[in-house]
Length: 207
Image: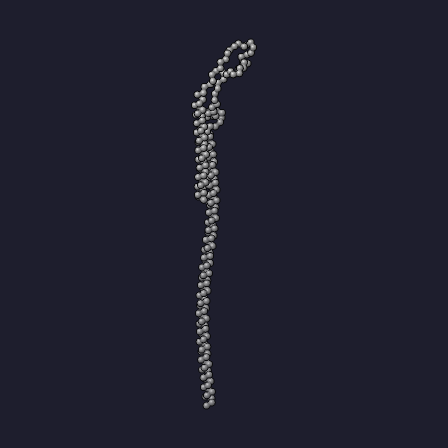
């Protein structure tokens, strides 16, 4: 995510720098054109005044109503239209080098930077939310693993306890079996003695 943020920032800055370079080139071109026009205008002189033959036609027409004949030059000077920065300012139009235009461009750049900053803030918020979710999931998984290990340990302890008890029970059963064998042997010995006594008593009675 940090790499993508850096790429976004670099892209925005490159875009801004490109726009600034284009605007600077346009300003240079306009200044160059204005300089060339200011150099060319004095070199071009107005055409010579036409030769007009003055005659008295006051009795026929007034001087103001006389129209020039075809092919005759009028006494009208010729000049190029040179729209410079000063004329644009006089007409109420903004020139590229005025503070108002620069202020507008700076405001545009600030707005673009503010948008980039807002988007980066949104991305950072989303990244923090994802990080919190990942941390919570990791915590739950770790807790489940610990619980599984605890249960596994408890089951192992229980199985060990049961195994020890079964071993103890087997040992006790073996002891009981040995005692039963001893009791059986003792009973058999008592039976033999009882039979011997019976025989002795019967032999005494017969005598």
